[in-house]
Amino acid sequence: MFSCRIGAVLSLRGTTLALALASALGATPLLAREMPEAGTAAAVKKPNVVILATGGTIAGAGADAANSATYTAAKVPVDKLIAAVPQMSTIANVRGEQVFQIASESFTDAQLVQLAKRVSQLLKQDDVDGVVVTHGTDTLEETSFFLDLVVKSDKPIVVVGSMRPSTAISADGALNLLDAVTVAASKESVGKGVTVTMNDYIQSGRDVNKRTNVVPSAFYSQWGPLGMVVEGKTYFFRSLAKRHNMTSEFDIDQIDSLPLVGIVYGSGNMIPGVYDAEVQAGAKAIVNGGTGNGSVPGYLVEKLKDIRAKGTIVIRSSRVPDGFVLRNAEQPDDTYDWVVAHDLNPAKAKILAAVALTKTSDTKDLQRIFWEY
Image (cartoon, rainbow, N blue to C red; front, side, top):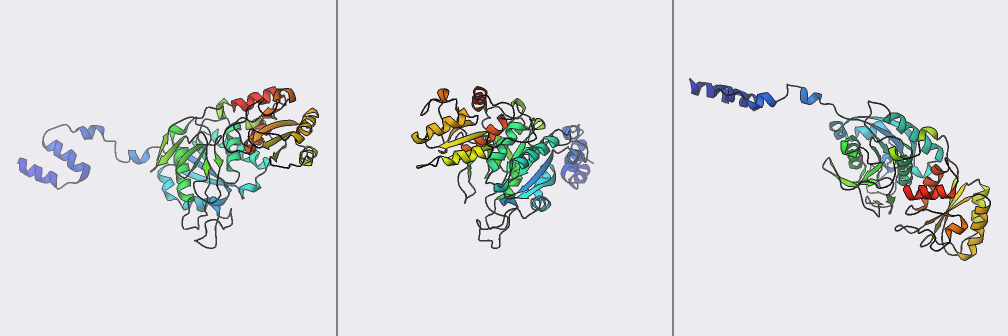
């Protein structure tokens, strides 16, 4: 009798085999107690992630698959971007919106504000767990920092791009997008600030800069990445030390426009009239992207002192990729009432200055903001 029962059991497969065998031996099957009912696993709630598409290379297309640097940006709509990476559906419930369809060098301050407001609106919804922004790489670092400053949410915000169009043999956009959704859907990403997920790395949107224009490993931070995405799993190794998102004093819901901030790039034999042109255009602040330690040529010191005396904020940044500008080194910033950008490059200093000027024009307060953010 026993052998017959075992024989019947062995005709079963998989889970049924284990349950039947235990029953035939007179045991209460542990597996039966721990196994969820049929269909429960499929019903486990996946995170909801919204992809906001703005264009860029990740939505680009070229005429020749052998060309990775010659193509037209912002051609592929968001629905096709999503359809091209069906693996995202195993990670999250994904839907998309086409906010813009432009190359990122064409981004304006007005579009930055519009994008941030939409991100903020979405993250206030209970049915949205994270947002991914697809973006051109040329100004990706600026948009990432802006979102980091003004969106009051601890839900994941991931900005992603690609260095090669989808038509290239070695296209990087599909994996970057999959990784971005992975990070946006991860509970480990909560409170980490805006991140940039490209080339397997999870970078801080505040820290990261574009360092090259022709290879996938284009984005780099002198302080190192926050972590990595490896085979569909996020690994974090550090956190952002600066104020961001929920700890920020800025809120996109209170910002409808940004004051104009100009940048003058440092070099030998600079032209003083460039600063005058920025002021005449209405710049409320000028970022001097100086050489070395944010240096200002001797023949320009009086020009910048005069600009400041007439009401325009002067901010010393540096064109050097790494390091940071020391206050009262090279120039007596306290005496001249200038501000230093700390470790922010000119482009990021411009973003922080514009956001800060929506609240204050006091140079002491502005300097505090540059230290804290």
